[in-house]
Image (tube, rainbow, N blue to C red; front, side, top):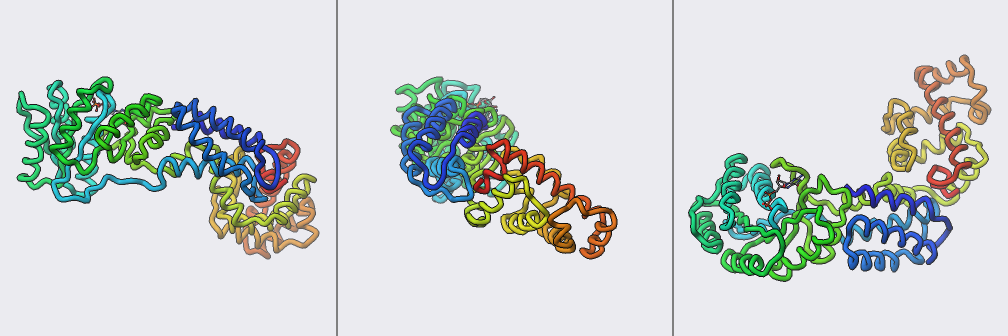
Length: 444
Ligand code: GDP
């Protein structure tokens, strides 16, 4: 959902150069892009400002692990900070109170409030076996009450009997009573919305809160409203002290600024996201996953983590030098295979690198398990030193001999040699062409 932001950060990544600790110039170049990207993603200006300041403070002078590029290091810092702002953990709805647990649903008209009420009720019933009662407090729009009733029937959840002429507060009281006497675990109150925030709406919501003492007050907000979402969240939060946010229409949101803005403006967790009109189109909000998606561009973050953990600076530089010269023999391939086995598989590693997804597909059978690495290492070990240094020597009879020695079919030898040739070609290209490839990745 956050494509445009990922694209932006992708450009920063290929633009930065340098070594060692991150310089102020590196960082401010990156931050300019981060700022622009966030604004374009419809994040509110104040949040953009606070966020980039935080990132800047952490990034300047940060040590760059030698096996990654500074740009990648900045991306990692931005990622960590995004996770911090979005909230570290997934926040499920709390039912940790005496039954029936009241949940108050608030938000503007058309935000998806009634739909979300139904989705949550269905989830509580299906996944947690809860007995849920639904009540619509929308006294101005009889159609809204009927909508909830229809929805309830559709998902097999009870709704409070509709009695015309009652006030929202009276309906709330009646709902609580019915839930108590009916032995319900949860009672969800779907309040009336307005087309915009007004005092009457806030006052009514506050009164309903006073009589129902809700355990959760969930603000339902349309992720497509972007900047407005901040004001909305802040108004509701100041007046009724919401406990969480449900972001709807995330399925249609290409920018994703609302999540960041609303969280930053209220400090309240985004608990769930709506990803479609169907009753099961509701997902937990995972800050990490969202931050990963914001950054997109191959999973640079985990690559940086893995590289930092596994590749020593010396190894990296030696390899980079060889790659630059276009020398990459089978001994090197063996070293890489052993290294990559440690790092969790070559295909998965390559998929994480921008522009290398295709090469990953050309790996034997597209498989990545350890056995393949072991077998390939065994094949190379069955070659003579000369053969490893000069793969051109490997004619049909030599291949047969090696296959026998390694206990594999000749076709496996052929595949390995083909893979080596592709890698060597690619490395030559990358080291000539510059950004984004293996040679740079490993310190070149
Ligand atoms: P309310 O006025 O806030 O109660 O809004 P409704 O629940 O009636 O929803 C308004 C419209 O938005 C309906 O057509 C819903 O199907 C649709 N809607 C709600 N949530 C989502 C969502 O997460 N994704 C999409 N695509 N549509 C949604």
